[in-house]
Length: 216
Image 1 (cartoon, rainbow, N blue to C red):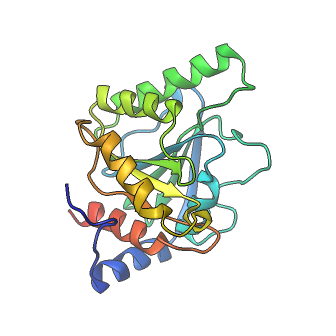
Image 2 (image 1 turned 90 degrees about the vertical axis):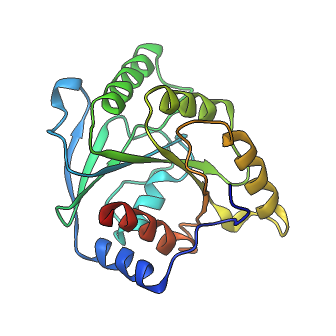
């Protein structure tokens, strides 16, 4: 693994990412049951994370829209797989948040079944971005999700959110700790993104990373 804290992108790649998301993002559908899953798209990327990690805020920042993904003071509102189309070339999938302590066990089991079926049945799914609160690092629920992604052989990449809340000197420490925990995981991507939806930091780089997948 590289010692670099974040991937390097050229100006051209940053611009490609900007243009990709500037071309239009539209909500397609929400999926709550297996038989509702749409046909496979040529390329899909998905976003997973704990229910309070700021996933909706990041998706809004990524797409440059205030309402593409609803935010709420009640974490875990996303109980479906929500599909969005980006310029008809790419599908973004907002996965149900996990760590929902207040949900009934039957609901949790149903969501887990839906997520597993999605991961196993999408040939165009190129990467899952797993969002983790930069202040706390990988928690047991996050590691369970990484285990599922390793088991289903789906490539994933860690995105550390709320990075603006880190104290000086904490960035390198949480980066090193995260890399250590994913070092031997077979499906883990070796670079970690730092983002702040509030400050729009790291969003251009995340767009560029997705644009790389589209161009590959």
